Length: 349
Image 1 (cartoon, rainbow, N blue to C red):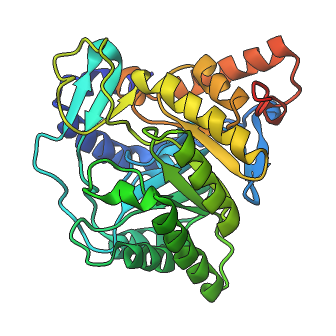
Image 2: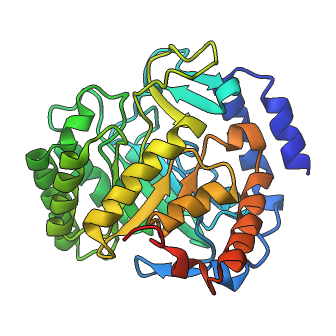
């Protein structure tokens, strides 16, 4: 209740200031937050060699420097993804770079991978008790002469502290980054990262985070490369550069990646197409526009074994997580599924 009241007050601040204040409050509150209550076992699933108490995760972008992962787990998330982190510290793009589209329940950001770098994250995570699942989302520095080498460096430095590693090639806010989704570049990138995993004799699952702004040919290429590389999953999807004509908010013209409610339908369509292409060979994580149990359930039925959210927290506060889990249980009961994993891909032929 207090956390949700605080979220309401924070919305009075400019978006990036509110985000910084939220992180500070969570760091202060973390030692005093009670652990989340035990989730209903019907929501639990096993994936990536891990046991997820529930399928609702925090998407990358909220906790770029792995400062409040354990606090967010205490708020009821089944897992948390930190980052995106780059090898060297990076200031990101010029401000303002984060915009609320309140009328559209959406957000536009052009943050530009602002973070304190992989060494700072590693030092912070080295002291973590490892209670709960925390993944790390890795990227490349904007001015790097060899971006693929950046991914290898981040993996090598941070894999010892990660339950899984997400390779982010889909941010629209680092010029040229999405070119790494092209078949040949993606093959080379994943070969380097999986090769580093083998060299380290590490067991970290590797997931690929892709953009929603792709066609069926790109879906086929990405799926084929991911399957050949023997990575474990794909996160579908990052923010979009599209701007639906029906957006009403005055900030809709801002450049950057659009997230929130307008992303739900297109990202779920890409997810469903990817499930049709990969079947059950890869774990798919559905992200984009989730603000209710029905939204999460639609992604699960479209093929997502897990889901993630972020933007909706800016509008609904942390109580949203519990509401989504309760609504998921109601939907499972309605449709006669004994557990959440039974519903995965139910809408895909």
